[in-house]
Amino acid sequence: MAYADQQKMTGSKLVGIVIAVAINAGILLALVFGLTISAIKKEIERVTTIDIEEPPPPPEEPDEPPPEQPQDVAPPPPVAPPPPINIAPAPPQIQTQPTIPPPAPPALRIPPPAPVAPPAPPPAPSKARGARTKNERSWAARIQENYPARALREEIEGTVGVRVTVTPDGRATGCSVTASSGSDILDAAACQGMERYARFEPALDDAGNPTTGAYSTRITYRLN
Image: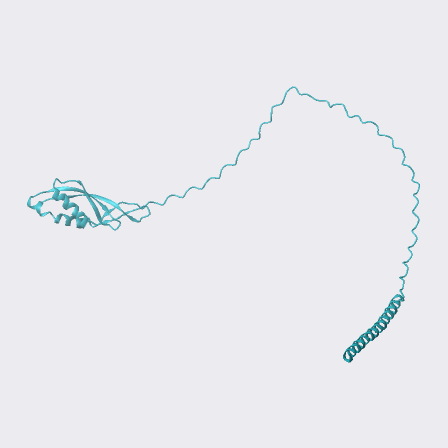
């Protein structure tokens, strides 16, 4: 029994302690809450008692001047309508002419005479000429001295007509037989002799410059 009573006593003490603590806490909360409410009320009173200055009233606008009274204007004088205008004047008189005069003849314009061209200068004298032989006796004798040996043996004689082209340097070329002697031997010997031995003064053009020309002659082969 002693142990059970001891346990009951301890429980009662614990309950009393809890109750005392709760009472003290409630008192403390009440004090704190009261202080807080007092501080809030003081702050509200401080805020609500702030003086607010009102802005100054706007300046009064000046009185507008009274509107001007319109002056009496005299009405315009009456205008009389313009007199009517006659838009149909009398037509002008038309004069008729029975005959139409002939038109005036056109003015005759004579063109000025054309300027006379100066006479052309006379042409310069031409210096053109044909080819001329040079030392003809010398080279003609040499051609006859080269009498063909076969013609000598057969005692063939005759005259051969030949034509050669004379170059600008005075040489004979392009020999052709214009009249045969009747012997092919003499004809061939005549052309060979002309191209080998004949010499010329070349032909000249209008300006006097050497040019190509031609020369014709006859070569006679005769036994002594």
